[in-house]
Image 1 (tube, rainbow, N blue to C red):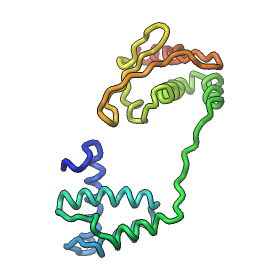
Image 2 (cartoon, rainbow, N blue to C red):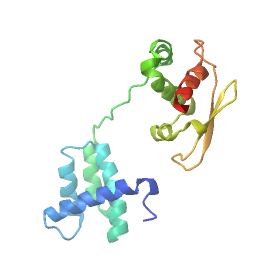
Image 3 (cartoon, rainbow, N blue to C red):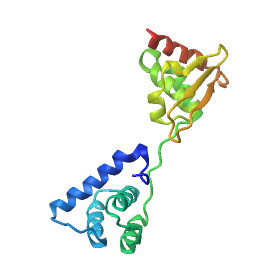
Image 4 (cartoon, rainbow, N blue to C red):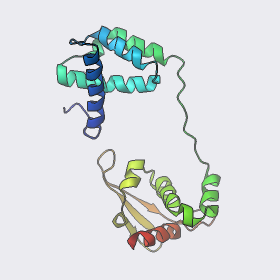
Length: 188
């Protein structure tokens, strides 16, 4: 299973299991290009083309590992997936402006939104992924009086990294104090 990313192994296995169950329901024993074409044609009725490609990639890896089947040579299947991608327009995530962020930090009541404010500050200052934010603990933050030093462990690429939160905010928002207020609540 070395060709399957370690952190994604469960997702790859689940995708493979879904395919195997689908084959069992149809009493299909051999996997070939025609079987995969029908499988992906059915999936294409409910999934976007980007999701189809992701499932194809996972299944390609798992079929290669578990059954020694090289799906990359199934040209009709890849042509089918390419046709499904024609005209596909991915959804763009909505992005907050700096003014919207500052307005939220200034106006949202701490009693309701303190944790979200801190997650926003950490997320923007450290370009953190959701999983990285979720795994942060108080012990990962060092208060250096004039700044906070944050150590992010267990990153996507397995390399720990650090970032600093300081008060270089144009609207005079004391980002450090917002974070300290939250950390004080978490220590008790």
